[in-house]
Length: 160
Image (tube, rainbow, N blue to C red):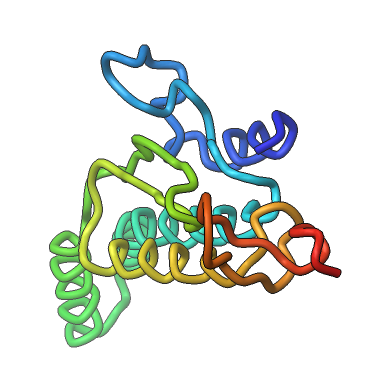
């Protein structure tokens, strides 16, 4: 991925890409985001959803805690808000960090430390989307049948 797009992702999602400056003995993110520019939107959308999944329980706890500051709430409402705080504490997960982002066998590979089943499903979906999206330009694409496997549109493959 070109430096400008890579830096945009690093700036938008500093918590996810916190390993980018670590040495190669600790992470593969030291090599940057190793795929074409056409997958930028897939990675951007994936990172947004991952960060939302990590942040949402904290935001909800803060919201319900603030509601409880109102001393005139009915007892049933107070109980409900307290239950919501307890439920959201159960949903807290550690910050997800990308350990490697690259192309492999014509598809996106997004390896992480941390997460849950929902984040695993988001990553799986993004990886599947990359297999029908041109890695170079982002238009619909297909994987070639011979040689080095890549996902390209007809124009970027040179068929158009």
